[in-house]
Each structure stands twice: as C-alpha cells, then as structure tokens.
Length: 319
Ligand code: 2P0
Image (cartoon, rainbow, N blue to C red; front, side, top):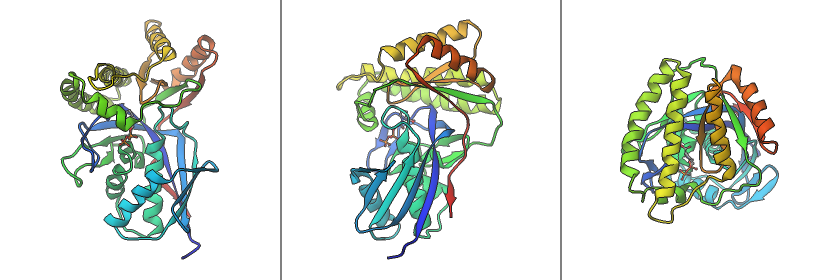
C-alpha cells in the first residue's frame, strides 16, 4: 500500500441532443448518439488513495459506495486488479436535481483511477470505460461541444470533442428549490422506451444530431437553440406517453419558466429551453444576453436560484 494520492477534475455537461434509452444495458450502449456542452461552472474533483475498503466521501459526507464499488470492480476485471480505494470528491454540481452530477463524477473517477494505477489509456479509452459507470460521463472528458457516438459494441461507443469554436453560447441554469429527483435516469429511460412514439423519436434524434453539428459548425446559435429545445421537449413527451408507468419530471415551475422562455423570444431575445432528468430548466442564450435574461427571470420568479454557465474545459489532473 502506498500513500500516493491522485486527483482528477471533470466538468459536467448538458446534452443539447439527449441520450434517453439504452440498446444494451450491460454495455450501456445508447439508442442514439448525443451531443453536449461541457460547462465551466460545475465540476467534480476526485481524489483517490489506497484504503482498507472502497469508500466514498462527497463534499465531506460519507455516501453509499455500492454504485462506485461496482464500477471499480468492473475496472479491476476489465483492465487490471487493484486494491481498495478511498475516494474523496468535491462536487459543485447540484446533485440529484436534474443537473448531471453523475457525468462529472464518473469521468473524474475513471481518470483518477487510471492515473493512480499508471494505466496508459487515451481519452477515447477513458470515455469508453466511464460509459459503464454512467452514459453521460463519456462526454465529460472533453472541452466545449462533445459528441457521444452510440456505436454498435463496446469499442465503438465513446465520446470525442467537436472542433474547438469560440461560439459565445451561455446557459442560464434555473435551479428550482427542494426538488430531489424521483425517477432515476436509468429507470426513466426504461419507461420512456415503452412509449409508442419511441422509434419515431430515435429517427428524429438521428436527424437532429446531424443538424446540430452543422449548426455548431455554422456558429448559428439560434438554430442550436431551436434544435436543442425541440429535442428536449420530444424526450419529455416520451415520459408522459410511456405505456409502462408514465411520468414527468416537470412541475408547475418548469411549465411557468417554459412559457416565460417563449415570451422572451417574442420580445426578441435569443432564448431556448433544455431540460434533463429533473424539473430544472436551462436556458440557452448568447453570452451578451445571459445577464439580462437572468435578471428578468429573477424579477419574475423570486425564489429561483440562477446561475450563468459558459463552455468549460476537458479533464485535468493535479499533481
Ligand atoms: C443526457 N441524461 O444526455 C441525458 C438527458 C439526462 C437527460 O444522461 O443510466 O446518469 O447512468 O447511463 O448518464 C442522465 O443519465 O444515465 C443523462 P446512466 P445518466 O445527458
């Protein structure tokens, strides 16, 4: 046993073209490719060191290590055996409220373990491994816009960065208070796949994935917003039309903010909504309009916690 500690930092990402369904649960292969923006303001920093058993501490609180332990066992089998690890994480992502903390968590953990064990792996390899912890983690190794190729097997399902762009995109993240997630993403996806609209959604998503890459290459922020909103609302439509235990992540505040986003557009703002596995709304806009939109939202919805997020960096290490 050594005293060596290794720290990795991964930023979370928000999908503009969503991952919402698995074609292989064991390999965690998605039914569609997805496309995301890594965010500067929200990240997980994870330190690993040898310990007596696998333990997990997040923001100084002991957590149930089961999911992480299972993932570490997967790495022990897949790459090389290693002893128990103490994992200490600092997380600035509001957890379990529809901001993808599992994305940055599993990306940071995969990178920290690989570095700790001196594994010589590429970012593609790390992305592929992190997929087995959480699908959205594949995309959190990369700066700015990233695509996760759905692939057809373990080797071909990983994420990579799109060419760097200085597109002045911003997100106004609306955090609706007191809303712990009720349906986990994994369960939500399973239910959504029972919607009669599911196969149509998969087809539409393939087209939107291509169109979104074109919009990014063209630096067309309005088109990016339109496609992202359309894609997100279609994902949530699957949840309410599921034949197995239909559900929604929306609450009244979600609907009120969605209506407000539409109003902002009629006033001439560039504003489009995207929503993940929770009630929170993220408003896609430009960096020069974000502050005004944030102020208008705060005036209208006094209890909302609002934060502006901008494109963030890829994985990094501290040593
Ligand atoms: C996404 N989400 O593309 C989608 C949109 C939430 C809504 O990926 O089962 O925690 O661990 O692979 O990555 C959240 O799901 O799911 C997610 P698992 P994950 O960002």
